[in-house]
Length: 344
Image (cartoon, rainbow, N blue to C red; front, side, top):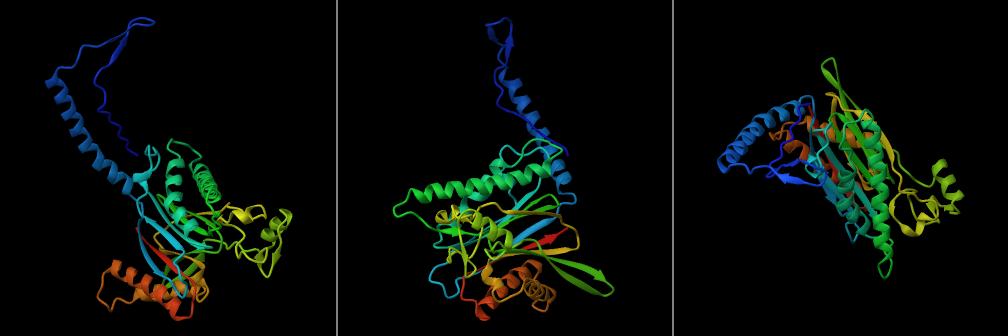
């Protein structure tokens, strides 16, 4: 990967002539300084396009489309983030990486404050903690970045929530997609989901597959229930203390001492040219669709080009129709859907 690092801040240089005697070098003549800056500017203009060309080679183009419906709820407690280019938030820019994308859905409960806080802060924390030095263990460092970012976001919200009067009791799930070049990372906690649509050409008819990319965290799962019980909590009627439907979340301070944690599951896979889109959605969608049904529904809409719209228009329409169809099928909950198109 070609790298470019130019500094225009150097006005005076110091020549060390003794243990404690720095002296300024002769000042640069204005015309010489101006010529040097012009030369550096020309060099930058020559190098940057080449760097962009190298970075874009083999990197998928990701675009996000969002559909939201309030359903029968009084308040929209879901939140979402669509950032096809997270690079502008990475400071300093990483040396090994030139393409990073981030998409996330947050399903709030007990209020909208936790989901909105996570939508505002989690990606910034990921950007701040993202590895910026060359390393043979980049994959391990990215996973650590995600785990640390979830923990810090949870800690920051709980600190803010506990300082309020009355104390905030909001919580939220989180399903995040982080794509670094062609490597996709899913970080998930709670019962929102991520599903991949992969299309293989078999004869004349394409064969579509839906692949689950996340696992739901509910108190009914054995390992989740055992952790809650060991922490002194109970599970009744499929809920923590008979109230909370998820066993992992951001926020929910009153349940953290009962074994509810903010540690996400992490999954990693490589995007290929056979991958068509990734669906991120809160559980409102999956109360009336199975994951496979949702993927098939979108895939059929994308295959229909009778509307005469371009590809972006079809993705946007498919996303909106999926959200509306969930409400039509009787979903009373908030519905949030992110459709991430994948193009090579």
